[in-house]
Image (tube, rainbow, N blue to C red; front, side, top):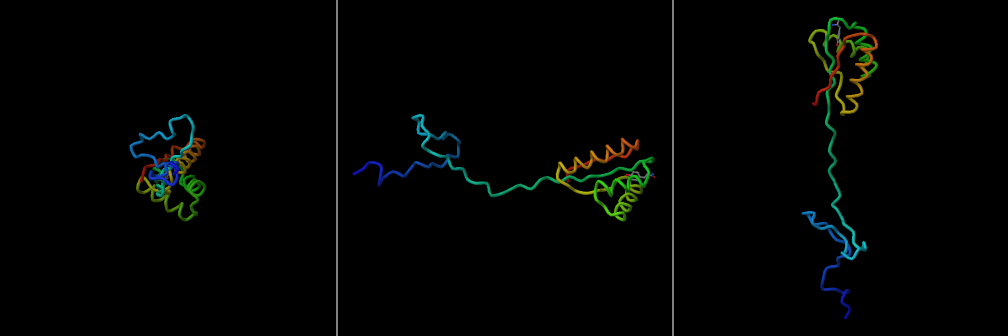
Amino acid sequence: MRADFPSDRPYNGLRLAKEDGSDKGGSGNGRSDTATITKPKTKSKRPSLYRVLILNDDYTPMEFVVLVLQDVFNKSREDAMRIMLHVHNHGVGECGVYPFEVAETKVTRVMDAARKNQHPLQCVMEKQ
Ligand code: TYC
């Protein structure tokens, strides 16, 4: 009878990794004749979302804020007017909710446009 097949020992050519990580794989003879199977990840995590807010000030022209909301946040003229007036009356308002890098890019675009036109308009993001 052959010692390796059929066998009274489980076939160990493909081995599952041990949970404690102590299993480094390999046969110990310097040759790679085993593979390590790791459990495939089934759950994907959704990205954190960030609110982008604009702040009121006494100097930035209303029309500039409306144009920024239309251009950077793709708002209709009507929605842009509504958000701008909300910020004018309440001090702060939401322009949208986005994944981190999108929110960051929009904040930068608003701040760059404001600086370029010498307006003190401020735009910030906060984790939702
Ligand atoms: N308060 C500004 C004014 O009276 C208008 C304004 C609105 C400024 C919204 C900033 O985020 C802002 N000209």
